Amino acid sequence: MNNNDKLGVKRLGFSIFLLIAGIIIGIVLVSEFHTIPPGQAVDGAIAIKPRSIDGTQQAFVEISKAVTPAVVNISTSRRRQDGDDSSGFPFNDPLFKRFFGGSPFERKESPKERRSQSLGSGVIVDPGGLIVTNNHVIEKADEIKVLLSDKREFIGKVVGTDPKSDLAVIRIDADNLPTIAWGDSGTLQVGEYILAIGSPFGFTQTVTMGIVSAIGRANVGLTDYEDFIQTDAAINPGNSGGAMVNIEGQLVGINTAIFTRSGGYMGIGFAVPSTMVKSVVDSLVTNGRVVRGWLGVAIQEVTSQLAKGFGLKEVRGALVSEVISNSPAEKAGFKRGDVIIAFMGQAIENSSKLRNIVARAEVGSRGKVKVIRNKKEVDLAVVIEAQPKDMFARERGEGKAVPSLSLGGIEVETLTSELALQLDISRGERGVVVMRVEPGSSAEEAGLRQGDLIMEVNHQEVHNTKDYEESLSKRPEGEAILLLIRRGERTLFLTVTP
Image (cartoon, rainbow, N blue to C red; front, side, top):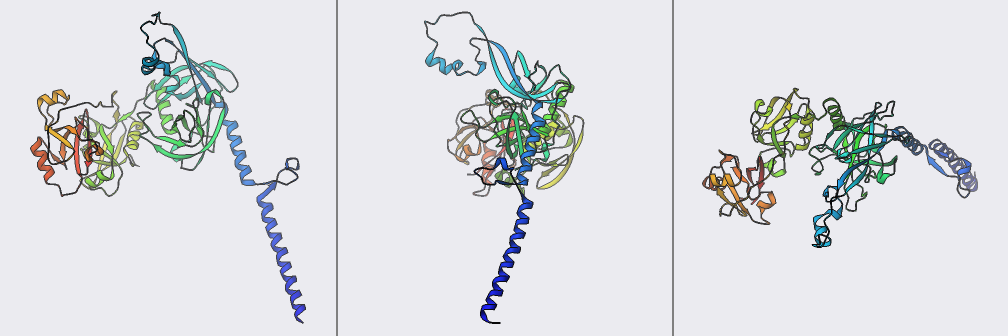
């Protein structure tokens, strides 16, 4: 065989290889894609799309059809008189009146009655007409109108409200209504698809899509009990009280608030998780109010500095800054300085999680608690009691400046009966009062305030300025100082790095 023949055989072999490869690729493409029907081709080109995308799209369509009938529009109205600033209109703001109103020549007329209105959303959770929404949607309303997806309109009656979680339950006189099944928000993961349904700006039955951006958001400053689901699904005014559903069409949250600088959507929305919502709804329906569990401790976050001060290996848990007298915690043997790392089988990452778990615990239930005390794990057993009415302490107290030498940036004075009376400090308390905190000092950065009562320095009790100075002088140079302070009716730990 000459060279030309050999070259021809090689070319034939390569052509056969290309033909086989093309057939294989074609089979793969046909299995993964399908063509849009001929009538939908654009400019004669055949469009293709992955079957997986088509399936996802159809899933969203089916979910939307299933859940939107159970999401209602809520409009409220209430009578108010001129001069009632509670409506929130800028024209009623005292600063506005100062510059643009309040003329001495203004005629004084009798107050006129007007009606203010607001719009929101709600979710039907029982075919007998039970609807959950946000407390701020129906708060102070004289009349609540509920518009269903089929355009029927009803007057809603309040079953119960819970301002601490910003939830409320109302009922309408109807039956055989569509509902959304409860989902378990505890299984949500960051990145999951969710849909938000509501009436933004009054546009009923609006569906938006996004993902779970974060879970367990707390310290947002919206409610007393926060465990928010954060999402990037478009939520706008009017969405409050609407549904957040997962890819299975289950209710996993109630849309509550947005973070905004413009008044509209900016990509950050918050929803109350369904685990909290269901607990509140059940309690409101059964008792007309929310009965929460109570442990009886004041707690705070564990920071890296506090973790170091208490010899913790990890920055997690809830630090007990005070044990309330005759509380379940005191009866169970809790001590100030304990770090709670597990409660009733659930790991405690932060103080917010502990607060929410205790609040949802059944009154009378007995649970095991794991704490770190003096760098060792200790197991305790506690019986949960009903939460007292007032759980949130007030902060108060001011004083005069008296120098102290050992910790720069603050000035302290021994607590006297006169100071105790002035600062409303209970009799029997001992310590030194912070009379002045220098702006920009490490003490101010640590959170120390004028009027704070310092009770311990590095776990050592201080009764006067002499004890205080001696305790500070014993610390290794350069190390952070751990302080136990009383602020108003609370006690808490702070670390100050000189």
